[in-house]
Length: 524
Image (cartoon, one colour):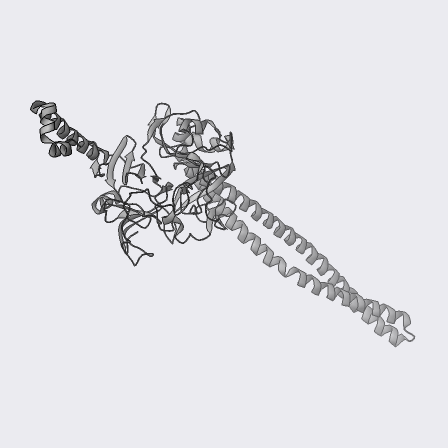
C-alpha cells in the first residue's frame, strides 16, 4: 500500500513525511519482506535426509516409520543409528499405522501383485504384502502401501536386521524414551544362568522319553497283533472240545443202549477212544485260555505303558520346549479390545512357504482397570541388561493415555509372569493397545496390530492371508512343537473413539494440500 501511495501521490508523500522518513519506511518494508520470506522458508518442513549416528552402531532393535515426516529411523540399545527418507502409501492405498515385525527377507524380491515389479532388499512385515524395500522416492507418499527406502540404504540395512525385529509405523513423529515401571519384567540372574543347562537337560530327557514312547508303541502293537489270533484259536479249541465231548456222550449212550455183547464191545471201544480225546481237548483249551489271559494281560499292560510313555513324551516335550523358549526374548501383547494377553516367542523353525514359526501357546485373560476407557498404543522394549535387570524404553503411537498410566491399569496374570519374567532377555517387549490383534497375526508372525483410527487403504485392498495356523502343545510335532488350524478372523473393526470424538474412516483423503502422484505402475 505504501508503494502504491507513493507512486500515485509522490509530491504529497514527500511533503508529508520528508525524504529521510520515506527512506526509513522503505528500509523497514524491505526488511519486513525479507523476514516474511525467511519465516515462510522456515515453516516448510525440511526434507528428510539419510544420516548415520556418529558412533559405532550395535544390533538394530527396532525401526520407527513416521508417516507424517516420511522418514524411517533405526535404533539400537543406545539410540538411533540410521535415518532415511521414505515414501509410504498414497491416498486410498495408505500404509497402515501400527505395530509390526520383520517376517521374511528377500534380497531380490519381485511383486506378485504389481506386474512382477522389482522390490530389492525386501523386508516383509505382513503376509498380505506390506513390506520395507528399496524404491524411488519422489519426496512424498507415493507407494501402494509399502514403505519405500532409498535403494542404497535398503541394501546397507538388509544384512543388519533380523526376523522378528520390531517395526513401528506411526502416523506422527515419535521416538523411544527411557522408561521404568514396576510392572516391567525383572529377570533373575540365577535363572538366566541356569537356563541353557536346563534346556539342554530337558531336551535330552524329552528325546529319551520320545524314544521310550516309540518303543512302547511298537511293543503294544506287537502284543496287539499276537492277541489278534487268540480268539480264532480259542474258538477252534472250543469246537474240538465240544466235538470230543459229544463223541464221548454218544459212546456212553451207545453203551447204555447195547443189547448184545458185540454192540456193547463196539460202544466200549468208542468210549475208550472218546474219553482221552475229550480230556485232551479240555486240557488244550484250558492251557490256551491261560496263555491267552497272559497275552491279553501283557497286551493291556503294553497298551497302558504306551499311553503312559506318550503322556511323558508330551509332558517332557512341553517342558523342553518351554525351556528352549526361555532362551528367546518374549513379546507380550495386551489388547483392551479382547481383554486378553498374548505371548509370542520365535522358535526359529523355518516354514516351507517362508518365514519362521512363532510359538503362540500362551493366550490368557488379562485384567485392565477401567476397560471402557481408551488406553492408547504403547510399545515397551527391553534394550539391554543393567544392574536392576533390564533397561527399557517406551514408544507411544496413539496417546489416548500416557505410557505409565497405561501400565498402571494392567494386572498381568502371575502364572504368566512366573513363566516369562525370571529369564526375560533383552529384546523382550510388551505392547499395550486398544486394538485387537490384526487378522494378519498368524503362525509366522510376531504381533500385527493396526491402528483402526488411521487410514488402512494399502492394507485392506490386499488379499488376506490363509487360515491361521496356531501353535499348541496338545499336538506334538518335530522339535516339540505342534499346531492346529484356526479360521482367520474377519477385518479389524474400528474403535468407537477418537480425538475430537470422531473416528477416521477408511479411504479418508490425504490432508488438504498434500501432493500425491499418479499411480506409478509396478511399485507398491
